[in-house]
Length: 406
Image 1: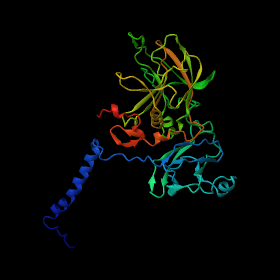
Image 2: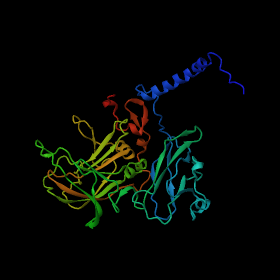
Image 3: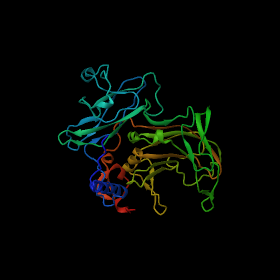
Image 4: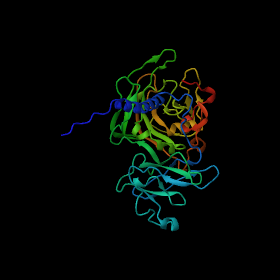
């Protein structure tokens, strides 16, 4: 057997020398990723034109439903529509030729759009697709599923940001909890012990299988006579913190509430009845909107269906998250950005200065029947305070006149 030949002297050094530039390059990339881009040398790219509008499409059980996509181009140039993701349940189809010509059934083509075909170019000149929900299934509490699409201006090749399509329930819900079988992953914040609400498997007035929480601590501020800390019902992330909730702008947030006990003649102040938060808004600093229990939203413990509109002009207030600054009326784009980037939905339970019990049922977020309803200027992006050359939805709420870098 022949002996292995040793490498020539210095070969290892030569190999190491050849690899050194690669190691240096990799180190530079890691350093770049680890440091904040304070000079905005690598800005986040965002397309303001064209725009794939966010739309909702109500789908009845067992019924193939035609969904209308919507694009915008500033110079009204023609656009191509590209499906970029598919719904997790049910099937997405092209419209059939007979439906395009005569409007007759069957509405959809023989074969559904498949994953390997993405991005799939929609051939319907009216930018329509058909969603077929799962067969023999009751309508969901919230939406059936969702998918995304983009529009492209074919001459320049310019692509839009993804547009969300929510395949909502027949009642136009995109997120909901009816508590039919349990607490549905809702939690309670602000209490000492109980982090999970109690589920009641029976009916009581308008409440039918509901959750409730009770006040475990009265931490009174003797100057204001109100609680220093308050407890809230908190919505679960899996149902309520989804990008397709952008389609709910202009829709409503609704729930049923009633007290089981408590002295509602002595209320806390202020009463931040509903709180919405977005962690990515305001250039990543976060944004909080509050709807107080005023201007028609007062509650004194009675059984009540509460409904608020998710749009400007409905008494939403922006929390400056700074006790030295005042609350302001939330703008159209602030509300739109928070709805699109929801990371918290909280409903106040701690209304009284003493103990109370509060029951909650039938929480839903519903889209407007007119689609698209998400404000176009907001979807085109807000000017970023840290670099006014840039625009994106996550910059909504950042004020160049009140911008303080980290």
